[in-house]
Amino acid sequence: METNNQYLHEVAITAIIIKDGKYLITRRSPNKKRFPGMWTVPGGKMETNDYLKLPKDTEFYWYNVLERTLRREIKEEVGIEINNIEYVTSLATVHSDGSPSLVISCAADYVSGEIKLQVEENDQFAWVSLEETENYQLLDGIYDELIMVENKKNGNRMEWQRFN
Image 1 (cartoon, rainbow, N blue to C red):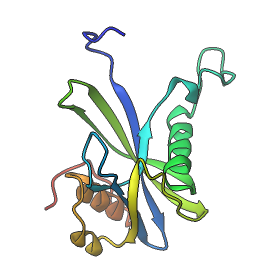
Image 2 (spheres, rainbow, N blue to C red):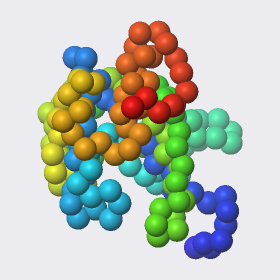
Image 3 (cartoon, rainbow, N blue to C red):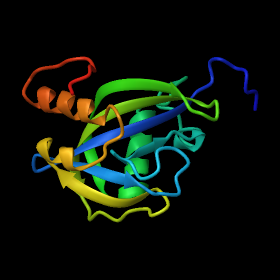
């Protein structure tokens, strides 16, 4: 794979999952290369199999590829079903290994299932209110995303900004 392609990013998508007014957070396994032991929201990387093996929805395009990826990742990582996926914000970084990442952050409603963690990804979970997140070492930026979702629930849409 060509590494000097400035347009090539890994694409990841995450979900702030809402159930009974609380949010699902997970702690990244201590063996993770990126952000070990930090609390975050579940999600993962898009794979070409998320669309290439499926029939196209129109002559040229697959639709809902991010939503399909997110549903797959949530099912794999935490064992639950979600719906009503809505865009929250996007973020980008270049990791210490030089890999550029684009992350699409979404909100979604819990539908069904019991939490069953994929232990190589996450080792703990909690359903928390915004106030309860103060008791967890959240990955930088997640708290601000949770505030965005809280505001959106109250009809106030906004772009990401630092709240704390």
